[in-house]
Length: 238
Image 1 (cartoon, rainbow, N blue to C red):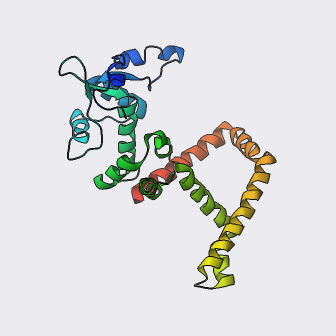
Image 2: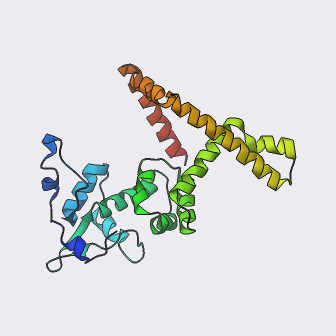
Image 3: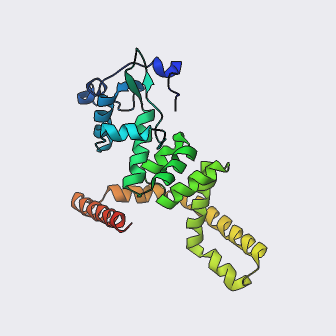
């Protein structure tokens, strides 16, 4: 995030919501165009991009010392405040997502915001990680681990579920054989990794994606509706 008052931030053009979407009819509108946006226009832009209306008071609270979720807006030409697009926009989207999708309390959101690198916010907004994985990822990154480390571990857990090496190793080795157990799991994962490479080379990933795209429109809409209903039910149970 650019700091308030930094030359790079203050040199950006000041745009309104209408100006940002002026080229929408030609399909050229870029809601993430780097610019400065006044508070009212920023809230309109956020509602358009993310479908959530945020009150001005809430926006101010997020930047307050008691919340510390959003950096303060920048100032140019007197006392007028401007928000940075896309930095403030995406940061606010992450905050809202953690609140509404995962029901994070304030202290958990603060941990994510303080430790989760902004260049990886897409993993949160695209639901590549569960709520517990988001928080765990933030804490692991605080300890110096990279996103690749964390995603590879997630892949490892998925591959483990194929052959269930964890439970097989306990059947074979018994409790207490930690070193032998870890070696067994690593060997099972390497075996599945080689199998995954062969699967990719055979073109099965593309075949599955093409099969999904080729589903009849009615079936696609029905399945999509089912998925959304499942997601809504999952959110209500949290």
